[in-house]
Length: 144
Image (tube, helix red, strand yellow):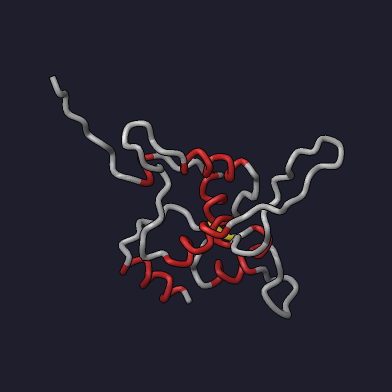
């Protein structure tokens, strides 16, 4: 597993800063041994993962990153065209149709279907990525 992950990272020229794991899965038992979690199992083969923050703050940040940048008029969060599954799920990510009994406000609870990649993006946004660690900087010239 470790070699396969490193081969993909090398092939894709990824500069890994952090590896995140779903906190619900990472802390659960990986098999018959009740003392061994998925996170620990990966650690034993040299793949360190941090448990992701499951806070809803990441969803709000992702919404902000999906709004067009005022200078370039395109979203700051973009998915490469080769990531077909991620695009498929983002297009189909929907909310449960439930209202709070007393206020009539919509509850912010997504459906479990097509939520894998959106959850991963939420985890990423909880770490507040910046242009210094996610993209090339933009150099502008003076147009006088």
